[in-house]
Image 1: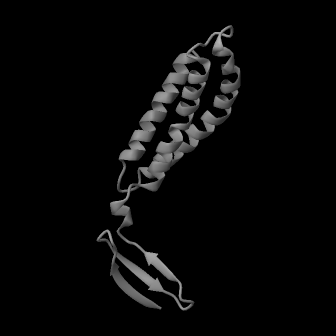
Image 2: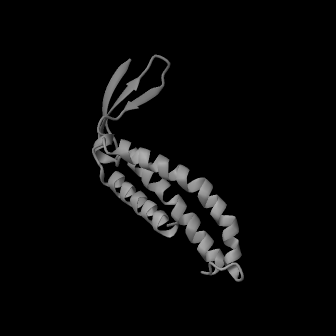
Length: 127
C-alpha cells in the first residue's frame, strides 16, 4: 500500500491509500470539520416531510377544511399524514439526538426545535 498526502481542489489535505488491487481509498480526516453533521442534515430533511404533506393538502383543498367545499380532499391526506408523520418525526428526533454528538450541532438543534413545534401543533389541534 502506498500512502499519499494530496491537497484537493478545495485546499483540504486528504490521505489517499492505494491498495494492492489498484483501488484508491480516500481517508479524508478533515471532512467532519468542513461539512455539516450528516445525521443533523437527514434529521432536518425528515422533519419537513409532514409539513410538506400538510401544505400540499392545504393547497389542494383550496384552504377549506369543510367537507362541502374542497375540504373533502383531506379524507385523502389525513391517512397519509397519520401514516407518515409519526414515523418521520420519530426517526428525525432519533437522528437529531445522534447528530448532537457531532462537531456542527446547529442543524440538529434546528431539527429538534421544528419537531417540537410540530408535536405542540398536533397536541393543540387534536386537544
